[in-house]
Image 1 (cartoon, rainbow, N blue to C red):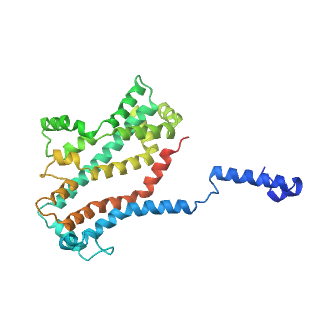
Image 2 (image 1 turned 120 degrees about the horizontal axis):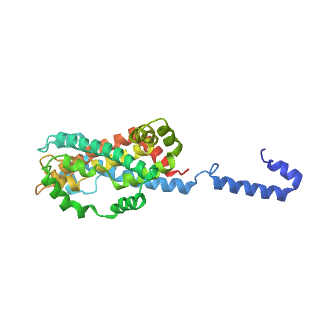
Length: 307
């Protein structure tokens, strides 16, 4: 039965009761958020965030569309892009660095790392969230605690291991250490704990499905939104990773960030050339966001909702 209208309350109970009912309904609407509209402060804050996020990229394009002499004379470029952008992009690929091979190396590393992180993190998350085994809680806490350990502390032993395996200078030296992440395990555990009901797992087991078959047919499709988010974030982190590839790969088989760093070699640094290389490295990330941005937002929202 629907609540009586405000005019009806005013006619039957008086104006004071109508005012009280109006205040109560306004409070419920604000608490529920269904009728709440953002004010100018919200739009102002969002506008500042957008400007702050886009400005570094725009500033990079301004430098990449100029030339070294102009930048040396005036480090603060004109707010209008120049006409040298295409020429600088061509110069980057015509340099002594094989940027095409570096781009291919980055694609191989980013795709392989993203796929392995999604698979193994979902597998571990399913185990922690839905399987009951001894030591599950302390083991999950230990996995999460590893996120507090700085990456730099493990560089020396990790390099020794890769050297003993004969993988120094090989792309596998970058792919293997990143095949699963503690954040990925934690994220998928939290998501599957709330998104995957036990009834589906029990029904699959009753139908005779094995444990891995249950994971593949039930848990993995249910984790698709969160897995898409994890894949995108992992791809971006792997694409922009510079520290470990610069150590284990060197200049023989560099990824794109390492190859761009080689553009700075020498006594003279061509800022326009370097910024053009940065633009090249950012374009694939922009394309990824344009293609999968909606899935990313859906994964974040669904992973943040409990129930």
